[in-house]
Length: 123
Image (cartoon, rainbow, N blue to C red; front, side, top):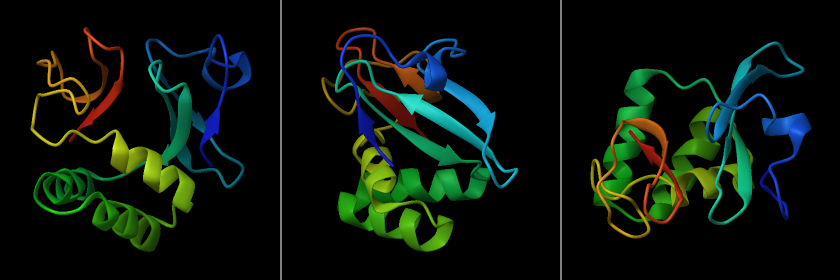
């Protein structure tokens, strides 16, 4: 579930983060990554997704409506709708380019834009 916070990232969720995400094990024993966005102050839990799924989501985000990404995440990965929406909205629309301000990104995967500080999921 997406949650919003004011001030610092809650230490019980992202205190162990190096940057804007943290990996942990949830109650079912599955590895999840908690991603945090310094720009919108939201965060979501992303279950471990295989490479093919991440590439598919990135491709859909770049060619179709964001609602398609939300639908795929919710249907195929059983991610709650609120987390699926957060993930979809933070997935880059162009590979290597910030989804918000269009600045170039320095790395793939989870990264924070050096210009606007938005979380980018560059899959």
